[in-house]
Length: 130
Image (cartoon, rainbow, N blue to C red; front, top):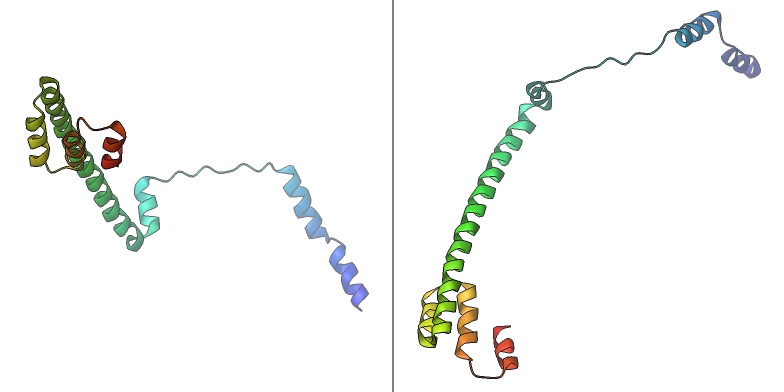
């Protein structure tokens, strides 16, 4: 009985042969489907796309705000470094040190330590700045 069942499964029927022949004769042409962005958003669902949109807006805001803050800080630092350089070239070490003390940035604190040790061995200056 089991052998009969297996032979029936292995032998293709006429309907199966017709389907196989028909599939071999007709070429498969893939259909192109296009989706707009709005359709993709609707397919994603509002529970997913809403928070994604809010997070995207927040990320863009943070990126713009941080880039403006960094640009502003670098511009101020460029002016600061130019003033320090001018003071040191003119020999006004006290003015350079005072400018470093009044400016509250990590670069100013580091330069103040270096300026206060002018005249000492270079190795001592490097150690104090590190």
